[in-house]
Each structure stands twice: as structure tokens, then as C-alpha cells.
Length: 155
Image 1 (cartoon, rainbow, N blue to C red):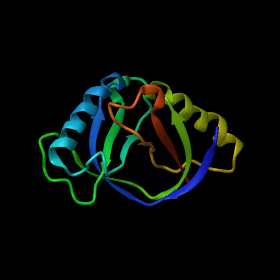
Image 2 (spheres, one colour; image 1 turned 120 degrees about the vertical axis):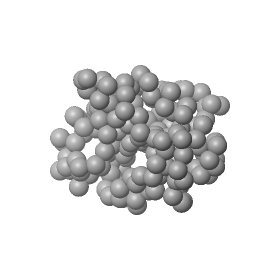
Image 3 (cartoon, rainbow, N blue to C red; image 1 turned 90 degrees about the horizontal axis):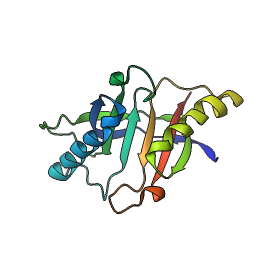
Image 4 (tube, rainbow, N blue to C red; image 1 turned 30 degrees about the vertical axis):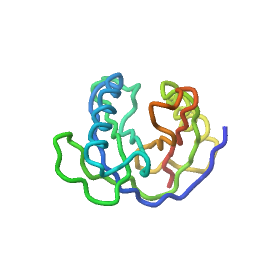
């Protein structure tokens, strides 16, 4: 497991808030994808794709799970019927860990960062959500080849 400490700049994003069970995330991803294609504000070919975890998908009750599906933007998001809005991923120090493969198992790596790696360091988690950068999103990418960087905010 290779963990690097990086400093990121603030990232302006268009965000669709998912506030429902984790199992319903695919429907929200499809909704965001439709907005992205229709609006042209955040083309997947030229802008980065993120997910921001405001809560733990393993927490109970599961209906309280909140996750933002995001695409990088250069301008403000115009009013739309999809519920996509302007948000910002805050600047700061982060521990970064790359995950390869299915997103179904990514929570294991997040838990490893939080429960195993962090206590063995002098680092402290910053009051900001963990976020993910999806490096090779697209239907043509086999699930076992997906690459996702996990960003764990640090003080």
C-alpha cells in the first residue's frame, strides 16, 4: 500500500447530491451522467470526475448516507432540472492512496487508511470529507481495471 501526502488546490465542481441508500448510487450516477452530457459544462473527456463522501456507507440508518457525485467545471453551473449545483472540494493536505478494481471494495482501503495507517502516524484527520478521483471512468473500462485515487484530508 503506497500512501503519499499531497497538497491539493481547491477544485470547483458541479455536484449532484445523493442522499439515500448506498445501493441507489448507480441511479444517481446515471442522472449525473445525463446532466453532464446534456449541459456540456463538464465533459468527461476533458474534466476530472470526483465523489465526495459526506457520510459512511456502512453507517445506520443507511437512508442517511450522503455522497456528492462531481465533475470539475470552469464556470458556474446554470440552473437545471437535475439538481446539479456548484460546490468546491477544499484545498489542503491529503493522504492519497490508489485503488485498482471494483468500487464495491474501495471502502476496505478507506477503512485501512483510517483505522490502520492514521494511528501509526503523527497525522490528524482534517474536518473535511474523504473524496475520490475516478481516473478512468467510462463504460469501456473493465471493472477490474478501474483506477481511483482516495484522498484522506489531513491537518
